[in-house]
Image (cartoon, rainbow, N blue to C red; front, side, top):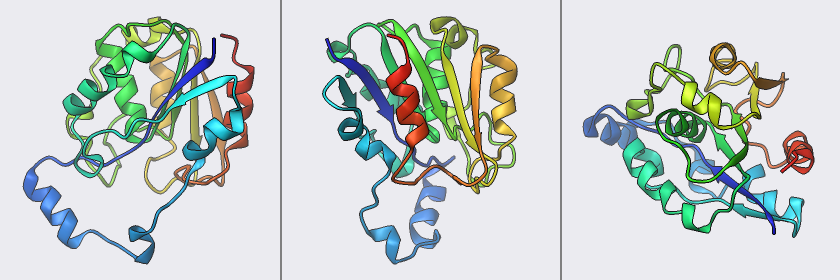
Length: 202
């Protein structure tokens, strides 16, 4: 049986439709905004090989994300998942997993959860978190897996490095991976996460 991984990408959310429209009209763009960008998430299946099965669902309305919409789509994956799955969330995808697992018991056993540049709250963020805001208690999340890994870079221009400590304070079993030069982890290569995934015991 193949080792399964679900990767939840990032996105943006707004407090109102007016804010979203303002973003579409006035948000900063460059030529690269309109070009296909590849990141480490796109290469996981190739790099990990046939022993793994990597799910990379495109979550609904990436640029105007709703937690409830993402929850519905995320749960559609469950029938295809076996026990001992690894969950990875990048940026908004990370706080989505943290909130989902804090409010719900996942239908399958979880081998590990990896949060990459995941905001904990919207303090000092340039963007709002909308309905992705975490509940007061993350105990349910904490109790669903013995392996939680946090990846943060202190030069991240999107999610302040201090957000990692907030997770660590409530997820006491979490292991931290800190960097000085990865910004928001949008690079094509992420050897450290590959090495970790290959060595996690299922």
